[in-house]
Length: 531
Ligand code: G4P
Image 1 (cartoon, rainbow, N blue to C red):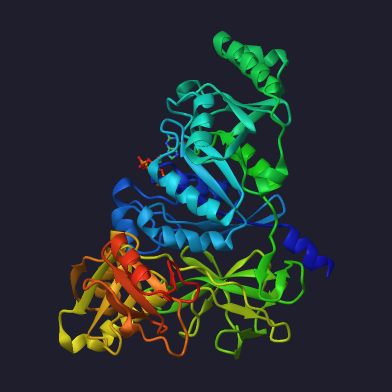
Image 2 (image 1 turned 45 degrees about the vertical axis):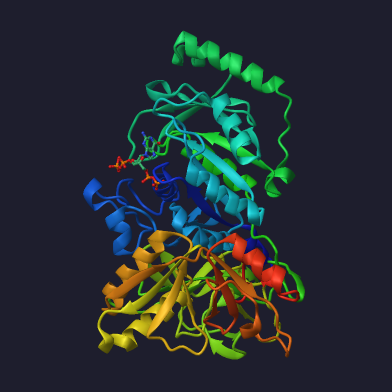
């Protein structure tokens, strides 16, 4: 038991979010460097034209240089066991980000110091705010000309509506970025050298240390003294509770590229970010220290490794300990199963794990039984975690296979990709699968579908975009409710999702109002917890 407590207390599970190019990949790599998981930086990303990250799996990601799916990296640092959940930067995959955040206990938001809050930062932040997760800010690229630090903080507060607390303060920027002042320890961390591949050396000096005056040009020294005075007079107390409630974001400055400020950030962040947090299930709040194993599936990914043609369900352990070969209950199917080969991932390298604890993410080979949001638990202590909401798609298209002889592969491909949550599929009631209606949040998801069907299932498709922009799930389940009798505008379409739930597709908000105005008992929902 003591072991269980210690193991769980030492876990830190978080996601990194950023606008593309702000430096998420670089900082992830530097965390791995400091954690000793890689020996040298620069191994993760290749040359520009073969640009890809450790955490990028799919060809399409490499080609486009964007991260489509989220992956998980685990490493140890100062006795802590760290799980980093990578998230796609592109807005078209924000649903995937949302699901990933369900598995995280906090998020690190990386911001480019010359740009401040960007479009995608705003969108991803919103997704975090919906979950109320603690958000830590790393203002990156201080080795380049940066915006004024006060202005950057203001930008975050105004644009995102969250309070900020600068935990450290930059000393200069661009070539003159010399270090940071750590407000909590009241000392200056002066960086030395420029070997970006290895850990950077730093001196910790008290603010009145005469060495400091010698280290910095006169004007920079004076600015630092003024800044420290200004900050200490600001009167804002650091409030960890507000951080944990997602109301205050601790801010750090640094440069992932030069390693300046990476380690000070990692150390403080790991002290401040919470250990595995409790999750809500049907039987109440599940404490992570509860010895009975429980987990939920937040992501399913097929064909991660072309050679294996497999499908992996990723689950976040919410309580207790998992041991290899242990009997578990898959609550949604009511089936007992043995999770024989759970895996943990270090990007492409998988290793079989013998045990894992609350806070960890494990990947399980999925024979096709798991769906996103499913609960897996100790058969003697059944619980059901609340589902993961499905976002309402905003773009729709009819998709069919070019070659009618490939119908089987087409159906399999489309269904599997939909089960992963990469797209949503609908069909007209009683219709077959000759063609399906695909719904997505962002247009890139269509491209991914097309690409994957061709590469993984050898099926080429024809896509015809549909004019619908809004979807609503019909919640009525009364015996005498007949969807066909609804009064709807002629351009409203009735469809079903994979689980047989009824939905309505609309071309405009006006048509939604028409439906609710003309059908008194109609109950519509704009997301579904069990789609
Ligand atoms: P992302 O995952 O958020 O999309 O960003 P990524 O880390 O891939 O970084 C985007 C670009 O910004 C890369 O340059 C990277 O080297 C650079 N970068 C990241 N952190 C810093 C930093 O602290 N300072 C500076 N100056 N640059 C930084 P690239 O030219 O696109 O690629 P590369 O050829 O340099 O690898």
